[in-house]
Length: 311
Ligand code: PMP
Image 1: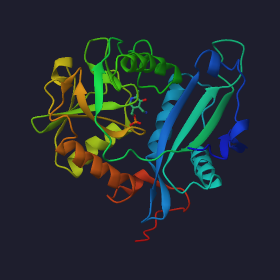
Image 2: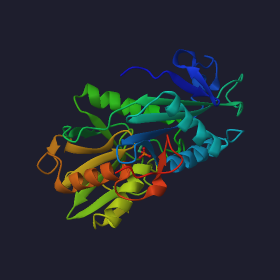
Image 3: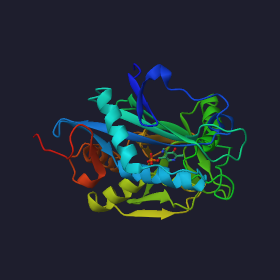
Image 4: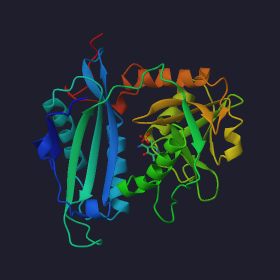
């Protein structure tokens, strides 16, 4: 996939190669960066690239900045405009993955809280193919960071060293992805995705106090399941051994979308292929993000000011 022509730095379009920060920025030396990953889906019907739940992502970015005590907030309506401008400047009429990073850009020590830089990248990234194989997952021996030390609810770049350690171990051991347990030994999440499993017709997902990122896709699925699929969802503590009882399981996130889990610690989940409920959730999600299942309040068009139906 080739690089986009432009990135946006502090609201200015800059050529890809010129999007730099100083090597001594606290963003680099101390990981003082918070970020968001946002997807845009191309809709033929609307003849536009639709950014999914953009305002919810920007709200979470503002929350991350607040918790990390970044001194200056961002003018989110302006950031919203910069994101749309960037996709248009790159002429991207396809599926995109947008990264928004807010970071402490200068300063001599660990305690500086300003100035804050803002970088936006819009990268071409196709949706996950429907027939992609299920993932082989393993419960990691690395535990999830916890709310009383490095809150997973905050999307801070340095938090990702935890998922990175677990992922590198899982890959070394021949698995596709780890599942991390919290410090209390309950199922938390995967490094970049939340987890759902199906037991006896009900979807179950670890509660938001299980040391997870409060996933926007997770929230979307809870709403989809209730509103469109008539499937009950329980949000609660989940034990490791319950994973082995699951009839279906999938991971979900903006980037990973809905990714079926084929096995966990070598135990097949159901038949090992994507189950019927997982497939229904995936199909409903694919329609929703392309503007084919209502919820227009969750969709921000890039090229037009409001959604237009070109059916
Ligand atoms: N957990 C972690 C640790 C993540 O990084 C992500 C990706 N943002 C998710 C869950 C899924 O969150 P979302 O659905 O908001 O992308």
